[in-house]
Length: 288
Picture 1: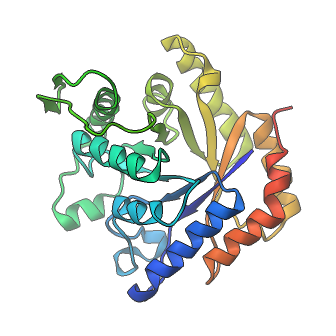
Picture 2: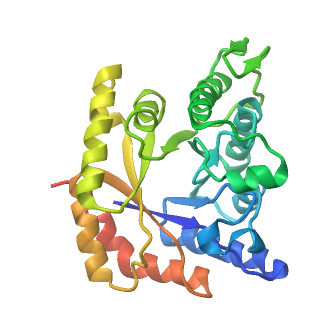
């Protein structure tokens, strides 16, 4: 199983954010972490203190981290479809991919945080429309990163020229976040390279993956083409033995990557310790 690090909180002192974030990214890059992600929000989420707490613009921050690292994949977990026009999003991801040497990830979802939209005056359509926009955004990105630079005509987006020069060095990995059985997992099956589920319960994740497999069958896709990833909200260093035992159960379901979030006042040291103490055993886990 691969290890991913998801950074969701930042120091309160603005002067320390850049060095702390850079050190965390370098620890991940040097320690063997495969993917490093940030959040895509304008306001910090309510469980972490809400808008009074620091939050960075995601893609600006990833551009900074591209210059601090050389190996780790970089992305947001996940971009809300309402945050950026899909043509501009595809261009942004392509730029990140070129400047990082082919390490860009597109993580995307239907968006949910209405407070930040209302706060900054950004339209927040009803859920059904957000899913329609999500599907169109996935289509636009695929076209922007392919050989067809002609028009795209959708219900919500119309592009006269899907030009993207320079193109990404490699087609960015596409991860759709969320566990909705009717819409989200269908979009994963149809468009994505990976799903991302909250690891709340092994039986629940097993059920979601069975639903995903059925959607893959419906669209004529081999389920093995879709990478299974999970996010955990526990500190793996609190009980490494228990953490690895739980990850073995997820690995048996076909989960290939787990996202963990740094804890404590020194996230770089935390990442380095996780890599040193857990990564070798985590990498040895596989489906049984």
